[in-house]
Amino acid sequence: MDKDRQKPEVFAFVPSYNHAPFIEKCLRSIIGQTRPPARLLVIDDGSRDDSPAIIERVLKDCPFDAELVVRPNRGLCATLNEGFSRSSGKYFAYIGSDDFWLPEFFEARTELMEQRPEAVLGYGHSYLIDENDEIFDNTANYREDWANYPDGNPRLMLLNGVSPVSSTIFYRRSALEKVAWNENSRLEDYEMYVRLATLGDFAFDPRVLSVWRHHSYNTSKDLLLMHREVIAAQNRNIDFLNVGREELEKFQSRITFRNARVFLQNGDKKEALTLGKESWRNVSSVKEAGKSLIQLMLPKSVLQAYQRRNRRKQVAYYRRERNGK
Image 1 (spheres, one colour):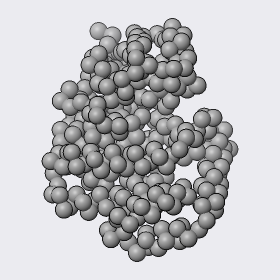
Image 2 (cartoon, helix red, strand yellow):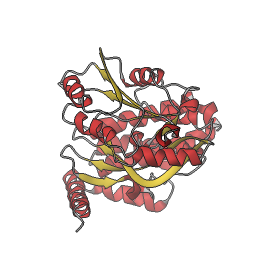
Image 3 (cartoon, helix red, strand yellow):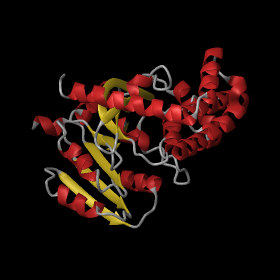
């Protein structure tokens, strides 16, 4: 029997929505894998731009089985459930139509999961990239703040409101068959991770094998939505988290304070104050509270200028690293 046929099958899925400038790069990152998937499915969720035409053109170059489904908009969680219902094989991986995988992603994740039969998913760190394809950060740079990803039991990470970046995830299909994406939630993955955590380990790989794109739209509005959705998902799934109400409220208070600090760093003092008032009693340290107080006293223009300077420095750093200088 051919050696490649003995390898476990991977099913790749792309939920597409209004990402015409980025979808080709996403799809070609799948076509160019060192260990390609057995099948690729793309569902366009009612895009109003040229995404379907671009997808159709790119898939003509696909050397393995690929399919495009174009239908009216139903939302991301419904699209994920539909994509999974059409999948097959041992492993399932999906990626947003504006993100992309590095060439070794499938090969490395398959090897990881084959070595960890108790794991329901494999995950890792990710580069952050802007609209111009410039890498400006890496989630590994935030290990002391929030991205201290565990290998094994993810319960404490999830209680702290942290979840892996979706573009880094590689699922075991047999585990996903026991859960589903909540189509009433606007934050697609956190609740899924909470439920999967009761079924097995999260296998961590420290290598950076995926890219997560950040856009220039209102990130404050996006962060506030994510914050509210995480708290709501925790409240809905308290039994899965295996924690009492009083203890959960302490975790939620710390999550709220951490997000208040992020608002401060972005110069959004109104939201920072609102969240800070709800959570200051459970701040983890006097040092952390002091930093927040200093940021609160600085003008918004200073905070935003600091953020822009940091991003420029990071872009320059990763550009030099990419060019081998």
